[in-house]
Amino acid sequence: MEPIARGKSWGGRKTPKRCDRLSSTTLILCVTACLIACLSAYNFGILIGQLLSDGEQQKCERMGPPADSDPHHPAEIEGKDGIGARVKPQLQLPNVLLVGAQKAGTTALASMLYQSGVCKPEVFGNDPAYYSKEVHFFDRPNRFRQGPSFYARRFRHCANSNLAMDATPAYFSFADRIRTTYDAVGNNQSEGLKILMIIREPIARELSVYNHKAYMYGKNKHNNTFANDIAWENGDILSFAEYAERTRGHINPNGTCRSEKQRARPYSFQYCFGLYASHLENWLKFFDSTNILVLAYDELLSDEEQIKRRVQMFLNFEKDVQMGKIEKRNVKKSGNKIDLPSCSMQSKLVATYRASNEALYKLLRTKSEPEMEQRPFPRFTVSNCTVVSYRNSRDKVA
Image 1: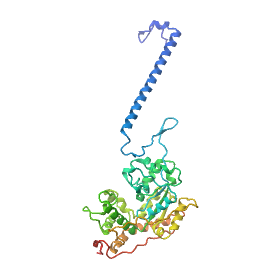
Image 2: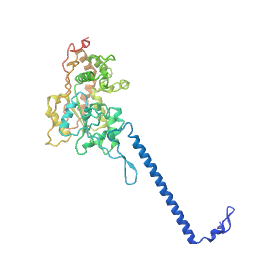
Image 3: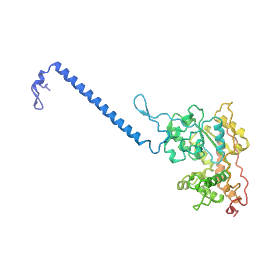
Image 4: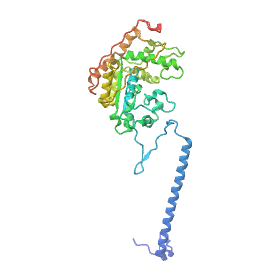
């Protein structure tokens, strides 16, 4: 192909002849002018972008934090790494969880550990005082949806502590959610997590739950989600037999929880807390056996020093640390309190929990770690019963 000659056309048009006479000086001036124009446009674009960014920031400040954020501690601003990609700051979650079982001595055990130097959660604003023991992050949707940052802020003051603990007994049913959250936060925190659980003969535990709910309902009938299932619609408190029948309705003959019952009512997972085998089996799916210490409520009552030694070894306390005293807790006086179940209802509950208890004993025989765990783990001893309950004639033997 021949080069286009001066004065000839490109596609039929003539090239202007005056371009032939451009000097080198003129060309340099043209190029310089173009460069200055480009730089000016670039700087102008940056200025406009900054003004828009400042406007959005002021708008956000006027709007305040999102509705589900912690009003006392706004969410952390994401940092930037060396190449400008946005990265979230590292969160530190508690490295000890006391997950249950409810009404099996968790308050006494938690108090002893907090006295011994384990860092406890911080309470913000109008939070109830018991949040200083149990955060209720994983079991309450309105708190869980606020994310790991919301949870980690409760333990920000524990940065210089070797151990920080959340002692929420309702976590018994949330092993999968806990594992997923700790994995998402990263830094191998799920691998270092220590899990404590203490279990009690399930009928005695069920009676203790009933008494606690009756007491709580008597204090606040109109705003108590935990205890609102203890009464009929007219406000009358259920007898223990009626409450226990509701619990039995949530349990399959094979000792597992009826899933359709759990979906039908909020917090109904609590009716299955006494099914220790299925809960422990689930925890062992998500966490190594070495990091799960199962304790016996009866030993907590009969041999406090031995319980302390087990916990001290499990959490790697320094040998010279003086462990706190284990005090009896949740001793509440109530006119509705029942000391013993009726013998009729006790027999029904023994049958209800038999399959689960036997599965638990078998599971614990195969659980060889951690080394300080009680072996052989004691079988449950059913307490005494009464022919007629102290409070309600509806508990009479049929």
